[in-house]
Length: 241
Image (cartoon, rainbow, N blue to C red; front, top):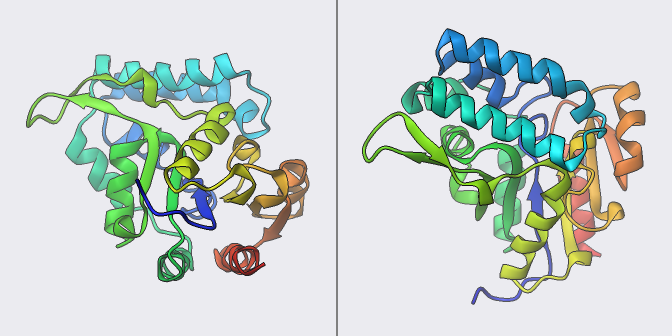
């Protein structure tokens, strides 16, 4: 059993670790799949994205969207090497690596809880020399041909959607015997409304005043900033309290 810790930290990926407007799956959906798959994936995004960002999708719709994407990857072709190469080109939000290093120095376990594909989140974090600073990645897991580049299916138990981010957060916290009241979370949208535990322990990064107003109901505090520094300052203050 892992040693007891005072806090754990859970982080969203797209728009939180990545700069605003940069997300892993849209890049994969253009750079690592067939043209037929790209069109099908864009149709799903057009159907669901706006309501997802505002927190209006039902849990069933959230799962349907993610499962639909994964099924397209399997049926119409997804290339592992091209996907990893594509996400590795995405920048990381300034200050993220420094924050992760400081949390590690303080022995605070960190997990990424993301609506995405775990293999590509791992590739992204590895490119930015952050993978070793994260204890767990909770995201959809694909099955692959042995030694191959094409997926054969996906693990339905691994799906992370906005409505179950809290469940995955608590699962991570239990590994370190941390109660839900001591899970600290950082996100950037309504899709992070359940991330972590208590609302007052959830911090939101916004791109402007309008977005800050949209996500404020889901967050204990928000900041408008292109860097991760306000989140780092908030996390350290919470940890030291």
